Length: 173
Image 1 (cartoon, rainbow, N blue to C red):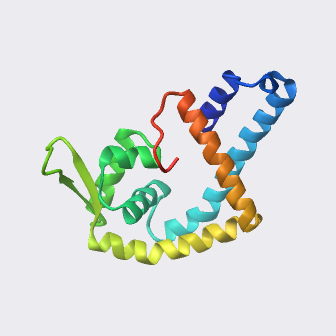
Image 2 (cartoon, rainbow, N blue to C red; image 1 turned 90 degrees about the vertical axis):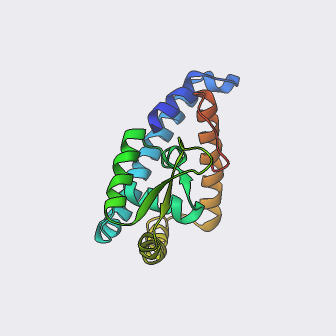
């Protein structure tokens, strides 16, 4: 996904400086740095999640429901960036464990919401603070202001790439 986004960004230059070899090299360096950063962060948080009996995608579903409340399954899929089939599979696993449930919307039977169960909320009450601590540890190489600056730049990159590919941009992008 990351490389697809960056390929789109480089294939549609809007400014003259984007046509240079320097920009090409910088774009490739950024793609590599982003990929390596994501892998390193995932390796840093993965063991803690595994100790809690969760994979990264399972945690992502629970985390979005923990912070946003009940959501349509399609919106969960969009927020955690996985396919519809993967979302269905993960939701089923979490339902089987009693951590979340599905319910049909009263106003439109075609819309199915996912929501945390009390057991799922209790798990997230325990797991999430330790997860944030682990993220802070893994990302301690940057100061708070550097983290904010990086987040701003990555948000802008994400918005541009999503716009360039015709994807829907949400308020969280």
